[in-house]
Image (cartoon, rainbow, N blue to C red; front, side, top):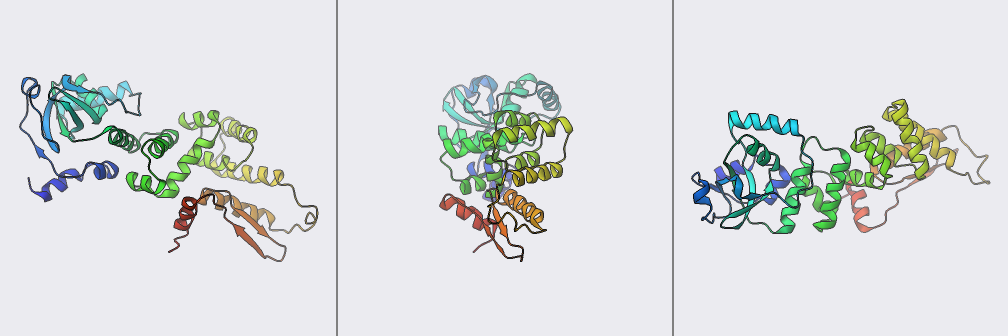
Length: 308
């Protein structure tokens, strides 16, 4: 197979996985369970491997697979076969370990297949974890908390920086930061996000409240009254305005557009992923403060500002 055709073949994978599974590969002739048991397949090739020789991925971050969806996929496989190969690493002449494609692997067993096409590659334990997490993130039906937890594991267990993580998963660093901020919310609210009781938009507004009890109070109000994101943003602005103790010397120096200033402050905080402070005098003069706690945080803010 030529280099060009190999590139076209690998181009169908997700952006993050494609970056990890680099290089061309060749399709080997279909192998029976008997022949694969005594054969060491070369890396970067595709071969039909016996399902009994494949172990599941111990680093798989997703532990629950919808049984109805698996049955539907199994029926599709019975009719059309496996369209996209799974990815494995070879442990020895008789055993392989799944890297990605567990739903296809499980559905193939349900469909009664004996072998499955698999792309064989070399990978150490850290690469296994990284690829499993990235494939998990690229699933369309993940909730925001599952994505945030996968991002956090990539940062802590794979020693990635946020910028590197963004490149791996094809997301802007601000997007990654917004997901990670969700993990600062109380467990009850995180469960609400996971169970689709509130959206990420709701959560991004609630996280701008400093007091945990107030966060939970607003969360319960969202669920009970089915508040829109816009209503929640307004509610959060009012709470923060009430909680802010005015300086006695400037208490009387309130100006008519103070509410508008607070509205801008809230929107900027959501946009930059950090608490923004906006001060304005009655004459319309003032300042905007954007705090940061590290060089990485400063670079993230500069990136948002398109600062060269």
